[in-house]
Image 1 (cartoon, rainbow, N blue to C red):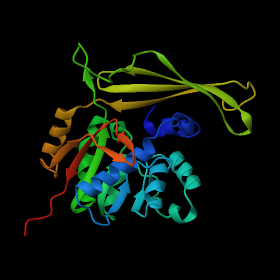
Image 2: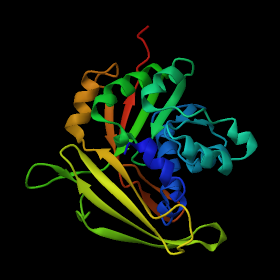
Image 3: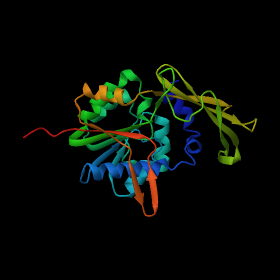
Image 4: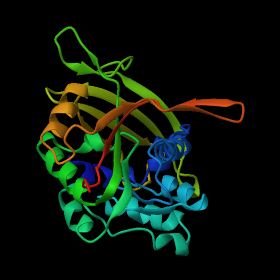
Length: 271
């Protein structure tokens, strides 16, 4: 199951999968940190995996000149329902990773970001082409940022998510859809040679509910700092990359983004 097919099912349950996390607000803080750190003045911003639109909505509420695109038509339907009519104009039609270059041939941005662990949904063979397309879609001195987990090496040398049990179903709660239809949700982590697989299982408690119980799987490419360095060494970005672990303070509250953020800057041509 590829990510587009997985999101076709996941869209029905996305609010419950994302519930209990404050990742949307933290993503906005990461974006603001990037704007400040790279001195982007009134940047034109693209959330290149905007999903159901929560981050885009928060950016627009803050007055940002932000736009969103996503590969999943079903997630964009959620975004269209979530955003106001005026904000809706900031959404591009569904655009798969492979087609991102076509969009970025026509549009230019000062900041393109893929946060929330969406970039690893790319297959390894797709990554260099997407990096090149994003480079072309940036204005001079524009910035591209994505995040990745801080993987650890297992005894067999394979990357693993720290603290995440393997082949164990994690309870994610009992939830209710509209009209009171209730269901149980859990997930399970497994690995292949190059990827982490997270399978969500939905068990409906109402026997008359349609659709029936279902599973859907997201497959994340495993890569570390060495892999990222190699991709960019053969990209138009060359060696203009940095790794950040954004932290900050808002009022009395400390915050910390739980992923490593990879940042590449498109250098303006020398005068």
